[in-house]
View 1 (cartoon, rainbow, N blue to C red):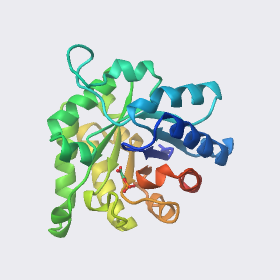
View 2: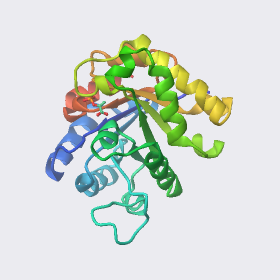
View 3: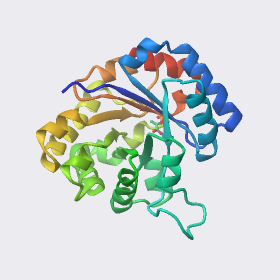
Length: 255
Ligand code: PEP
């Protein structure tokens, strides 16, 4: 089954709601409608920008989609500071990032927490972008495949094949995030193809063939082409380069 590439821009904790509007306008202006037949392009702003982004995208009928960077495991109640799946769905989100390495590292989110967030997203019809990725020590020891597959299994444990079919996986080696050290296309393909083989075990071969597996880590307009040319890499999760409209549009146009 042909998989449509996805380029998703993770803005992290950057841009206020006015800057968010300007960035979405810049990306949309730079990307003619024909590109959206070939690639899905998404922005993932901070929670505080989502309403502005929704108003702009829906009001101007832009072809970009959008989503959030995190989700509560709870649906409502006394959870100060949390944002729930129903709230994100009501804001028209398509996507939500779960298990980003910054959440795993700074908020001690383990695979069980990632699984709970993945389940919370699926329960309200959001597509979770489930992030996994090894640190430098694991990579230097040559254990990256085993490490990523363990994270994958833990983050999707017990999901039905139908639910596995609804997720996007993002392979993001921690040593490549925000460092300018991008994985080689071969390194990205090695792990992404192993992820796909594992998805066949967790669900079935049809599901594995349909799930999008992204690469993330210092992707930019110059290096995206050779990375997404790999057979098991179906797009990119982009951090730093997603904050510059021209750069993000350019890398979205290449895919
Ligand atoms: C990310 O944080 O998901 C990411 C890939 O960041 P960067 O592109 O800046 O490495």
